[in-house]
Length: 287
Ligand SMILES: [Zn+2]
Ligand SMILES: [Zn+2]
Image (tube, rainbow, N blue to C red; front, side, top):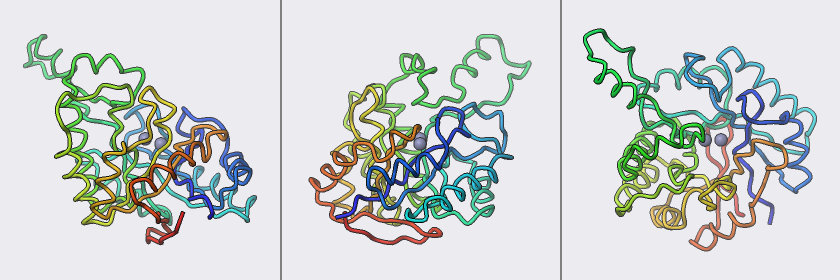
């Protein structure tokens, strides 16, 4: 049985990954993969949105790097894709990105649970102003902002996160939803049952035919667990949600990492098939 495709990997253009796509491709061949997909962090309309993604004017360069890997490794199927941040209100921008290149798929990921607020207005008192800033944008997986968790109720964060993930699944903008329970990264777990949140998200994914990825990067984080959890994956299987696999590699040595564990997890909840995407059309594959 061939290994499933590794559908989640980055490039140095996002400013926090190392190694060129050709090096990721070489590693893929070395570990026995036959198919991979590049999904670097998509640009935002404003390049100053944050500091962990490519600039909008680097999109062509990104595509060229992936094409070069394709030319140098003809024995490997290489997909051209992006990991796109879902934030409410960004839909138009995501459609613009989609029209720029013949992408094979988009992974829709939620990292932000709050939006950048408009600049402070003079009418706000300083204390109100501080509060507006404190509730400004927050990417829950950012190690530089881990202290923010201490000011938040974990259940509230998980609720907003899954509400956005559900919107992403319903949006029709993405083929795959990335690392579906990312808020567990630093082990800030809610003290209430989140099953209804997972259910709403997975029902949306099932009805839209959107896949959920098994992302092995969680094993390399504090949570020491694949994204999503066994509970979520079991629920996904019961609802007929398709799956993909991804290492979320930020270095060539991480390509295909821990796929044996991911395969074991997927099989243990009942999956025997995963899916692939070509030009945004789904295909099936056994694993
Ligand atoms: Zn991500
Ligand atoms: Zn990623």
